Image 1 (cartoon, helix red, strand yellow):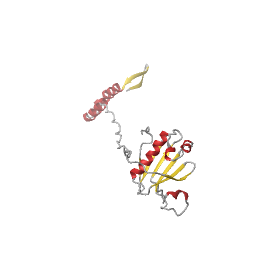
Image 2 (cartoon, rainbow, N blue to C red):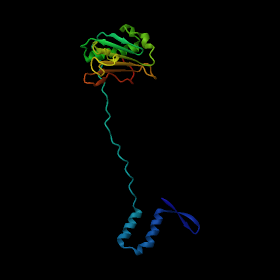
Image 3 (cartoon, one colour):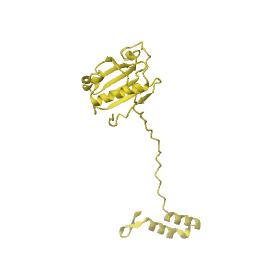
Image 4 (cartoon, rainbow, N blue to C red):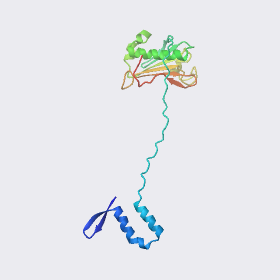
Length: 198
């Protein structure tokens, strides 16, 4: 480190070490020995560089998507259709794997443009602005819950078994699939931001 020290010629650059030497020579005769030692050591010592603060390492949770079910999807039929939503019903005792298989079937149809084969309108799907939803219910008992304002058939909560969402404002083929459980939790069936793989 350099300091500007004024002398009779103007300003001259004198190092910190030179300043310490001058300080020692002037005052060393007038100070006790222990204090002189402290001053000398203080001038020559260099402080260790500060260690950077440790960044806490937080465990990053990795979501484990379930494997695609190999079981055949049961039949579905349209319970209600509006501008952007299909409400569909399947058999009342459908298993989680069967519901998942239905949702995966919708994903395949979206990427293959084959909704007509499922007796759903491909033209309707293609006209989405920008999103369409498919809500699958086990049986018809709870399927009309979105269309009543009171006296909900299965309580004031969402009772769909599976959902498929297709399209967003930046990617018309972005899609998401969710399996809903009776305890109110849900399982995402795939990573919606990963490329589609049949």
